[in-house]
Length: 326
Image (cartoon, rainbow, N blue to C red; front, side, top):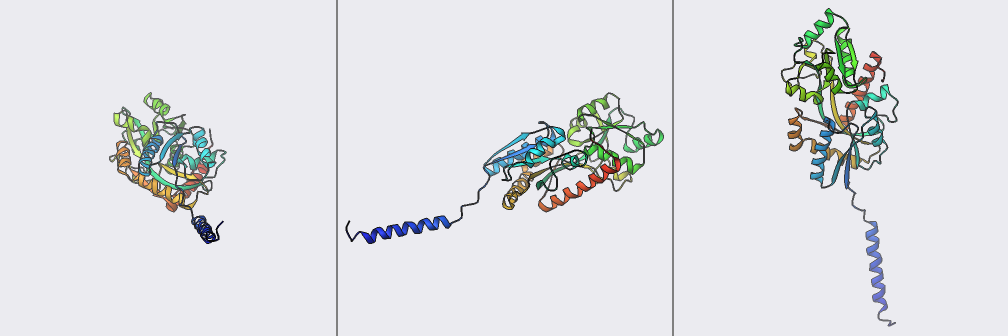
């Protein structure tokens, strides 16, 4: 080999090593999720499922990723919830749930801790619980139902979809507030409860608005009170229970997003950004508006604090009413 070529070869090798060192030292760009799975621990077709699909559609379009909904119903939302609690905390699997997430640990044996096993992302929508009677019922208002309970203790029967759900707890809290003797009747779902109501077997049903909105719109059911503090925009003429004088009463349902615990902070921040934008998008507002609902987006530490307050409040009500799982 020519001695004149050696310096050039050495120079080439030195430059190659230098460039390799720079490439090695340069941090790789942060990874972003290539897909998103929203697990809904309820059957397809319900309000939570519809909301999840609205959010998946918006996030998929806005972020150019594959966003899908997976329904994992069963055991009062526990099956789907436990699936997400065990999922890898990489921002690609989240849970869309409701108050059962906070209630189940008080009355059932679960494998998750709602305040430890998940990182809250965002509350997406709130909607009231509604007392309804058949359209042909002689009861025209909540005041009428309370008067009936006072006149004939034990004769007022109120049904909802299962022991330990938010409507059951809300009803027990109302019983305690009024001091009246009323009877709770548990059904395996909202549909059988409404069928029993329309068949004249019970006095009233206490349900979340989304589940019975169709019967309300058709006129088959008459709303007589909502459990929220303020009147509900979807039923502006229906008074709240606090308006009847029970000022501390409040009962609502909601749907929110949670990620598995130990999701990295930057990944969690990305999820907050995605779901906040999706929930406030014109698409979400339009489609939720058709259901009589509006987004109620609350994210991060504020959402976490809200979940903690509700968990403690549900626990207090459950212990006071001695509610046990079916």
